Image (cartoon, rainbow over all chains, first blue to last red):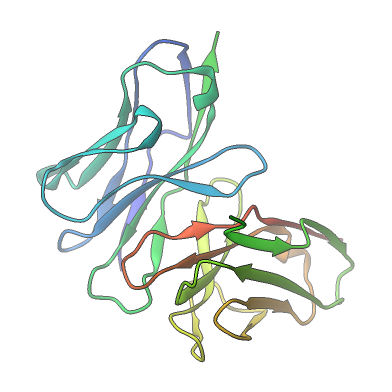
Length: 115
Length: 112
């Protein structure tokens, strides 16, 4: 079965600084990859997804992610963080040939933004 | 657009009580899902419905039942609530296989 690891539980970053969130997955082939963001008291919102093709994926809110097959990673980046980016971020994978579109989520990374 | 609507938003139950969480989507999506979210564990799939008329177990189905009432609605029932079921429950829907899922705002459930 596939698994997803987000090594950083908390990250604190200054407003205007760059941000990188790590995600590693375990699966025998290339899965479909997703990043979601969750603001306090809200549901999850899709930031971006990777299915195939260009390994650098652009998403909403100025986020991008890079798929690296050799490292089984799909790290999320933002060049300049805004206070509104304070939230919890989840990486998720989906197995292409599995029925039911079942996502496996990482444990999440909570981002705090310092003024 | 309402998207995915969950009711109620908050609920407190006593151990042994039963409860049904409601979920409805207005995006004409085929697939619907129920997750629970616990600190440090991300979201774990309880049950899903790949299409109207079908339901299947996810990672943590014990203690829960579901009903796909029609294409729009997917309910989650706790027959005899236990403190271990204290969690935030999310419903999601997707157009189909391998498509992004859209989430509701969650139901925060406490069982005393």
